[in-house]
Image (tube, rainbow, N blue to C red; front, top):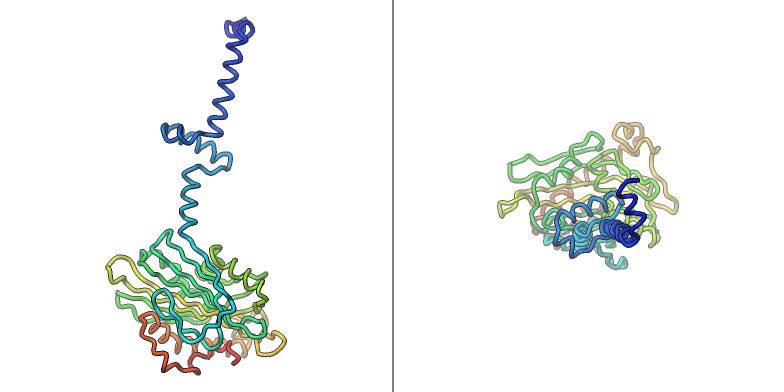
Length: 320
């Protein structure tokens, strides 16, 4: 019999103390005291590792999450508001296509870069969505690398059409049209950069959920008429940008939702199989090219609302 075994059997008080020490040490690791973590950095790193293994966030992680949550703000303005013409947006002007538009959701993110404002609007006829806008703009400059996703949206082989202005070293501007499928109340596109926008968990799900709750129905196909403008900040640090994506519905006017062509025709190679699909895409692309100067004026805040053209504002999805 070893000395430890004899001591274990003959010293009950020592045995109890040893057991309690082990139990208390275990609890100290599983449920760390904040004051002790602040005093002993090595102890905090050890408890953080154990908490991570158990799937539990550390105090520092919780504080960071709370801070990020406070810097990401979502608001839902009254949807009974009807907007038309030109509206203020991110310190600039946003021209709205023809019809009455309802605000769906506003989202502001200043976690990773200055401030990025996102606003979503919807237009409908008899409860069916005929237009959906995702407008984004910076109110503070951000690093140029953070705009790569928006630039990639324009230069994608899955787009119907695309174009851009010649780059002068100070600004970049492009526009594009692309197919958007609606599946199980989700936007689906083969343009991966655009998919990152239309499936953003930060504002798309709550926006689509709100549309559904308010009785708005989405057609199975939409055509994105997108515009992106990026320019160097006047302060010399980073870039400023604006992006407007107008989802236009090809559904024909009437009580029943009728989409031209077959589902597979709503793609770049497939649209040549349906004259009706090709016609709608061409009309959308032509309208967008005439609409981009208005978006550009809105970015610089020089839109003249008194000279507003109703014909120019009428996109192919509007059935006024």
